[in-house]
Length: 191
Image (cartoon, rainbow, N blue to C red; front, side, top):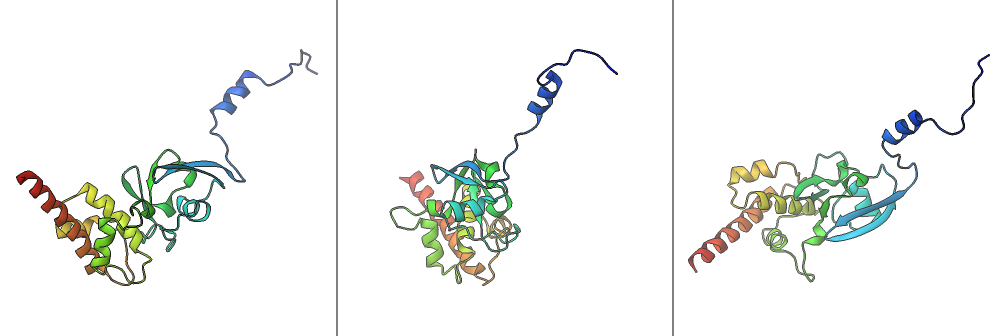
């Protein structure tokens, strides 16, 4: 039988190992704060919910569509920190520090953005499920590549799928935006 003085409390070794572990979230809802469309939005959500689920179910932003739910179609595309991302493939809890833009951020005073209007003018949608993802992807694509060639466009927009096959209209809309920007820059240089 060992004798010795019994100590109360937790040893220093145990305290260190507990503090080195990452925090545990859940299993129930936890507070989440997201920077969406320039606003800090707070809600509670289970830690396993995707950004898409939180946007749609908790925040009422239904522009990003839940279609494949496997990061293959692009219908849920949003912009996070200036980059195109599939909202169905990231946990909401992991993007609390990101600046997130959804399709709802593009219209101004109920008027579609120039890119959205270009999609309308080019008849670039049929059923509409892919449209918001294409518009968000095209927004980021044109920011990265303002003067794309047709080949640039095909490569740069390959992460979005349209089951109705409106690719010709989508291409026309994006190229029209590119040409509009190019014409505006040329006029600004001349004038």
